[in-house]
Length: 426
Image (tube, rainbow, N blue to C red; front, side):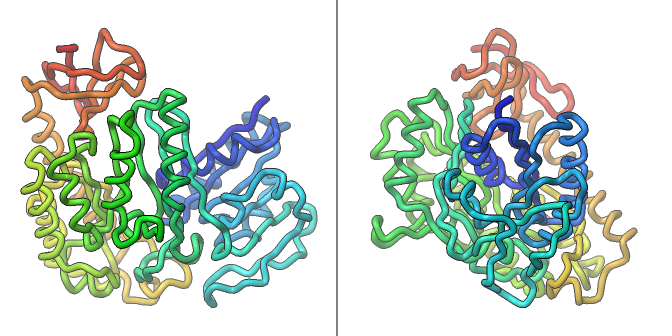
């Protein structure tokens, strides 16, 4: 049986896991873990147990951010055969297979970074090469919609986040490798390419001279005429540059849905999060995007119940849904991560955190339903992601009869069924 991948968390994880599974020996299950919240770590453990139960004879390998931060804990899990740190990602399969176990890096990025011992008994093996030295590669996911990684790591220090520890410093994939990876995916039949990474708006490449993500996208679209649908994963609003805004305004092949890492709508909370934008900055960024592309839709990550959050601060985040016209909100109840500054701040009571998250989700769901209703009776360009479900250019899901996976066309939206639109080919 061929190697398979199970991914949790971000789109980068999905791209990396599929690339790793493509080079792993048959019978391997790669669980690519997430550490963004305590719930994500719990779900990782569930996925490991489920994988072992479903395939008792498989070689279960755990990698990803949770494995990087807590290697000993995952090595001690009975269902786990090996633990690979994030530094393995981008290494070739032969190189991985020739490194002796247990291999533990002597590099210590910060005092918070987990430092596993080599005394692991019989419960697991750890492969933990230095993450700051790992060379990011253009990971890919060969599907109708393909994810291509252009960057890894993060140079910022948000007080709630451990990802900068788990992923190391920001590193960008050279332009030529990104271009070639995208071209390969198009040759294999991909109809849409999504550029992904930990912080893709931090993309920098000497080949391109001055400029970052915007210039990268301009070059890709110029060099690859067959690239008809280009989408971007999560963006840090403060890093959106002029070149990207130019593309948003004038390039129809750049699809008009933009997911922003906003996190909160209150200035004091944003400061305590150590975010680099203010509430006014977020609103201004969305206004600039909407001015450049009136049909653009906005998604956002938002955290409920950050330490010290008052009721008024929580309401400021709630109001951000309207002020930034957010139609696709990812709501996270605050989860203190060990060793982070936010974990040492005065905490909001858990029941209050849950209630504020529920309130945000309810308001976001109402806004999304209202937005979907505005699309009824309109014609929407789409890509069929399966034999029954299409995705519009602005990220609306459409249940569509008479089309097959991979088809591109225009749909007449005839109604809404819950969170999904219903339509027919126009």
